[in-house]
Image 1: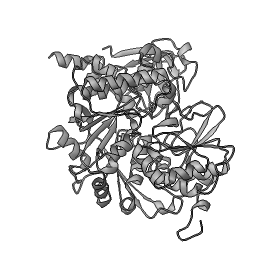
Image 2: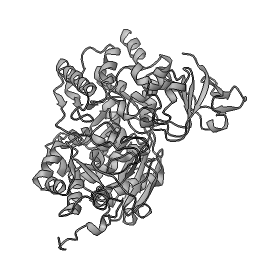
Image 3: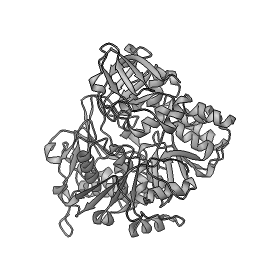
Image 4: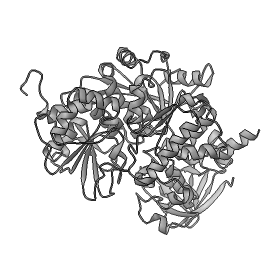
Length: 423
Length: 166
């Protein structure tokens, strides 16, 4: 069995599972986002009275944090009432940040854990050797009622990453390149495991970015075998109870791919599909009115660090507004401690409190018709960040920062300060 | 449930994501009637006004990709879409649709029989879709196992109520 299958088997209380089988699994952590009050409605509609395992439930006020309309405020109020009535202590209110980063910061993302959130980017948690997957509101309501959910055991793809990241190139470029190569529907219903020497060298933040965006080629779940990098992170966040599973020798993968990441340069996913990916050279010079640095894909400490490195002592272009949205309160505090936020704000960036913000086009920095946004987030669908006639180009945090400086899509490499070089 | 469905076709392309099916700007709405008003608005801003209930949405690959929002399935169901027939569906949308009792039909050769405004008849039992205007037919994948059990019960909610009663 694959490690993911062992996690499923353990949570289904059976010795073995096989590909294609439907299994009913106990959910360790069930997360609900504030945009889906339908969860509470569905819970009532299935005759839910008491949440079966309230200690396993987290409610995240992250998509509307803080509320920007009365309707949003009413929905959040209803969620707070629900938490109170159902003795759900895990209410992550508007100050905490985006669910996936909060789960990581607080040690919920850990090996062997089965995590289900009403957010498609729950694939992120494979970075920790967890089984993480997104579902809709009614599926989540079923978990509230029974503590369990049914899953089909997926076929699993292995992607080996070898080589070294080049200067100015990040994990975001690697995953954009793979999505461009394999297509937006390549991994629908599949699990995706990442392995290889390049993965072993990646930080937790880089692994999270790669696993996060796997939902953009349809993946159900991702996996990276926990290693010293994982264990160091877990010790740092105080997660000390977990089970590490390993894939049996001879497990038969649905497909295997190998990428040499040394050959990948800065990438751009042009409008309006995440697999419309090319090298940056094709789009250099495209004017941008907004630069968005944030989200569960591109709002981590390392992302803010590279942007601060590029923008230090410089100014955002006069025709471009740059939004900086740390992914969580913890990320914001760390970024302030290291001076990144001060550098970015001094450079003319607009600070937005930890949340999903403009990534999903609901508030805090929508784009107008005819405007273009260069974004460190994960989706460039028509209308995703505001007007349908607006355009979104997806790129790494470094490209976003360099583009904010120049007011047009720009290569970050000239702005990277070489070690020991001049400031 | 009725294993035979028929309706007029409304055509869309590949990779129709849930932001196009239901734009994020309206996620704060919670009642099905309000949600229905914005059906497919991100792909065709006039869809809700010219759509006739009972119609069938026809699409290419990866219909429903992107966000997990159940609003995407709710808006189609509440607007009166009888079924969605596509070359393939994204995973979370597929679960959401089936959970709501919305038939989602996989038809790899849909291009060969699709025609805007023409009638399509879908026979889930026989595994065939037919353009009733031209008589052209294409094979569909049968819905099986637990997904069919949910669909046959009219959705996961009635199914859970049934199981509750047992």
